[in-house]
Length: 348
Image (cartoon, rainbow, N blue to C red; front, side, top):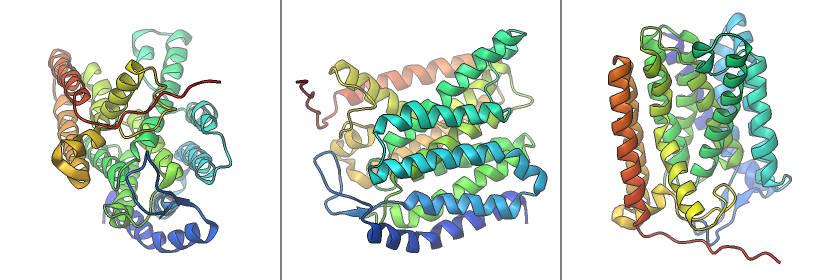
């Protein structure tokens, strides 16, 4: 049995089974998400589901990875644990929400940098320390941005876990095609953990992953993107592939950022029912239809990532331009779709 398949099976089984005691623990300590005007559920739902996914991924790493591989992923595990803990504390109401955005996520990105994991964009264009420091800055922005985008994506049953699972499929495929065993196995672990949790999180959800789970998945998605190396692809294709794989959540974040900014709201500090899935549901798809459409979005963009890996710089540029135009047109179209507008808070 391949390491990737074994990691998937271990993570999926652990996540599936751990959800039972985790759900009981959430109910016992009172960690539940209450209904509200900005929520789509109508009754209290236990949080802490992310703890089951965390356990699934970590168990797979401990069993499948040997000593050398474990040492290589130490920084990843440390950063993922940090954002998960910060998220769970936020779920419990023990942290201000800005701590996770301005302290937890950047610190996790610095841990990756200290482990030697960073973007390789500017360093390929400029030799010397300047290229490295620019790549370090890009790494922090990327990790914080993707982690935060998954944090705000967790607003509908099965959405965040399913989008992460779909992205993991294509990270695993591209890593396997390029001989990256460690990345393939890690992606398979995340896929398994998300798939096992989806059994209890898809509508009607019996448990939510909470911010700890969403940030955990987002951090691992950002890390897989940084670790993915397309050895025989053009430079532009190598940079584009991870962005295409994660374009479902990038699109959603772009939509709410543009929409809320136009209304004078702070994008990451003003939650509401104005995300892509909310608008798709209001167009007649319903919640399940909207979530499945986001899965399909992830599948198409992941397929585009596999395609771009075989294109020249010119071909990748053309594909990138077409995707960008399509996404901007989709943003303009969805801005006209019905959604529940937030009321701007008045300052004293």
